[in-house]
Image (cartoon, rainbow, N blue to C red; front, side, top):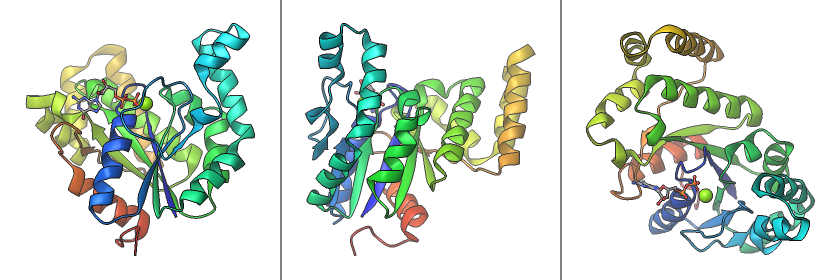
Amino acid sequence: MFLIFVLGTAGSGKSELTGVFTRYLEMQGEDAMAVNLDPGTLTLPYTANVDVRDYIRVDALMEEYGLGPNGGLMLASEMMLEIIEQLASDIDDFGPDVALIDTPGQLEMFAFRDVGAKIAGELSDEGKGILYLFDSAFCRDPLNYVMNMFLASAINSRFLLPQVSVLSKADLLQGELEEVEGWAEDPTLLEEAINSRLSGMNRLISQDMMDVISKLGIEFTPIPFSTRTNLGFNRLYSVITLAFMGGEPFTS
Ligand SMILES: Nc1nc2c(ncn2[C@@H]2O[C@H](COP(=O)(O)OP(=O)(O)O)[C@@H](O)[C@H]2O)c(=O)[nH]1
Ligand SMILES: [Mg+2]
């Protein structure tokens, strides 16, 4: 069984990608399932085969303990640590070859608290990988694009798992898609955009961040993807099977 954790900032399209791409994987003959690990979401755009909300719900915690949304989320993340074994056995019972795991709306809850790394460590001893979503809404501007690279690097060093980048909601970029794709394919084009479009502190920060990221040796080529136009589905499938499975399908 291979677990794919879908990570990205709030609203980057994690839940939609989880639902739609799980169905796509099934159409490719993969034995795939969708897992929801977001205890805070009220609605999901897919039917989760395993759902953390069967055990923990942020809205119920808020009501029971008189907490606001952030307090509820923090309590939920503590409680999730206590039910990891239960979630692991729920996933095992389902017995898929590949599970897409939708993570909390707020990236920081999963990426920067203990809960994410512990869940990733304890949910399975078998293969694991990460899909990091660069939200197109934050990618028009070279400063935000570099900030996204930085977040992706932070996740990479935190989880130490094979990682594939996705440029989510790419249909929103329309005429700007070609330029952003250029930044993804060729860092010198991104440097040019930083120099020509940014000034002052923003330019300095972006240049320095790019230096740090290139020293880390991490490469990002976010794959343009859209659940609205089906853009990028085939490419993402071949990239993840190559990066995670050495080119073999998940279901052999
Ligand atoms: N235009 C467009 N909108 C999308 C796409 N994927 C998701 N969305 C929308 O973006 C918003 C956030 O998506 P969601 O999957 O809930 O993000 P999450 O917070 O990362 O789970 C929702 O309104 C989705 O309908 C896409 O490919 N294209
Ligand atoms: Mg979500």
